[in-house]
Length: 111
Length: 120
Image 1 (tube, rainbow over the protein chains, first blue to last red):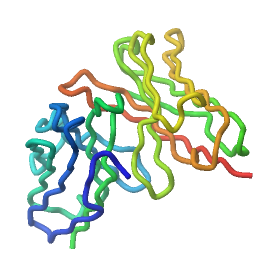
Image 2: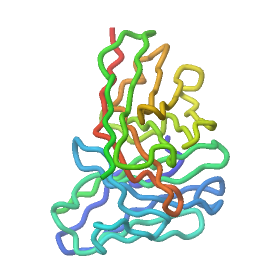
Image 3: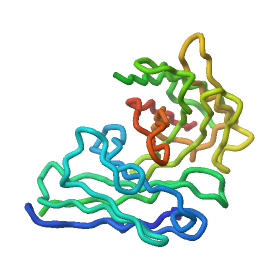
């Protein structure tokens, strides 16, 4: 049971927009801690996709965007491409556990 | 370019020990906190342990407290994870990760991972 809750899977057609939610609580996202998002291609290490809720590292396409409100955060992907089909994880800090925590991950399928 | 190269994984019997190493290059090692993150087969990511840039602060997941120890050697730019009393549930790919100083301190650099299998 992950501290941050993500949907196990989402899907969308090429060119469409999808969102992946990350729901936390008052001891993590709701306490004001930043949310980061990682993309993990099969058999590879995670890659930082969004940091500090809304910021993209250099090299990440602007099709990817992040937002945060209350105890939740979201990753939005517009103009879906086949290469976006992989796993996505959210991360934040939990003050009650005193450790960084991840969501359970969401598998994105491009139909 | 940030490079993190893990080593030391392998097959070990329950109750055994392993020491993982992560050789870092491409950045000023002492300026950054480092972490070990694991991923069990078919599962999600779990932060196992972290150590501050100065080495004076460490933290551990409850699942490994008292069994795992993180440390760092500044002369070798290397982070270690000593794993004792290993259990089947410790089986995972272990990634070394660099915690950046960007907003919110995300993990911006990752190694390729090393597989630890605990089995008799």
